Structures are given as structure tokens and as C-alpha cells.
Length: 239
Image (cartoon, rainbow, N blue to C red; front, side, top):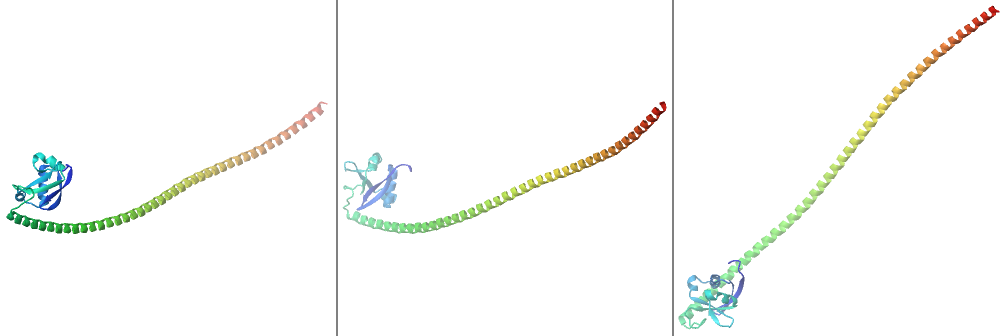
């Protein structure tokens, strides 16, 4: 029944207009009225619950007309077996009614005191809740500031790490290139030295050959001259 629609009616009871929230359920209505009047089960069994229908006629609540009662906004109570609903002429009953009114006033007063206590308690917890809320917001701001500083520090460290890593890689790359160039230069110098040695050896060989050829040419010239001389002698003898 908790999901059913709820409405508020006004119950006229012994000269008091009491607002009551009800649901369209017979048992719920009886329980709501009993609770609003602070009645025990025994006290509640002594009264009737009445309502005004659409024709402004007063009807006594029962299970069969619960829907009509729910649609009404004005309700009243009456003593059971009373000829006129809401009217009691017996002095003893009037005395009881006054006692009941005083008792009801006391309960209402206690209820007000309870409400005041509840109100103070609510204010206390509301204040504590506001303090907790403020504390939470402050802690959240501190955490945000701390997280911001941490993020900035992490970003700074990552940047420095990236820069150092790039620097190390570039230096290693440059060193490798320099080593390669130095190796090539040393290799080229060694090859050049060898080529110079080969050239010098070739020149030396050429010079040696040149001297040998000159020597051979000189020897040939000498031999040729001797041949010429011999030839001249032979010619003269034949003459």
C-alpha cells in the first residue's frame, strides 16, 4: 500500500479541525485517524468516522464506501449510538469529553515539545552537516591543490626525463657518427699512407730501371762505336 497516492483531509473532532493524510484504503484510514487523535484501540472503537459526500450528506465510513470517503475533503467524528453525530447531551459524557480534551491538549503540548526537541535536534544535525560539508569542501580544495602540484611536479619530471633522454640519445648518436668518421679518417689515412708507399716504391723502381736502361744504352753506344771502328778498319784493308 506504500506506493498508493496520498491526500490530506480535514477531520472535525470535538471542535478541532485536524489535518490528516490518508490513502484510499479502509484500514489505512482508520489507522491514520486513530494516530491523529492519539487514541488507543479501545477509545477508537467508541467513535464513528463520518464524511460529507458530493451531495453534502453525512455518511458513516465503512469498507463499502471507502472510495466515496476518500473523495471527500471534510470529515467528522461522532460517538457510537449517539442520535446526533457530533452532539453529546449527557453531563457525564460532557465531563468525559472535557477530560478527553484536556488529555488531548496535554498530548498536543507534549507533541509540540517533542517537535521542538526534534527541531533542535534537526538544527544541531543540520549545523553538524554544514560543518562536515564545509570541511569536505575544504579538504576537496586541498586535495585539488595537492593533485595540481603533484601533476605539475610529475609533468616537470617527465619533461626533464624526456629532455635528458633525448640529450643522451643525441650525444650517443653524435659520438657514434664521430667514431665512424674518425674510423673512416684513420682508415683513409692508412690507405693513403700505403698508396704513398706504393707510389714511392714505384718511383724508386722507375728510377732504378731508368739507371739500368741508361747503363744499357751507354753500353750499347759503346758497343756500337766499337762496331763502327771495326767496320772502318775492315773497309780500309779491303781497299
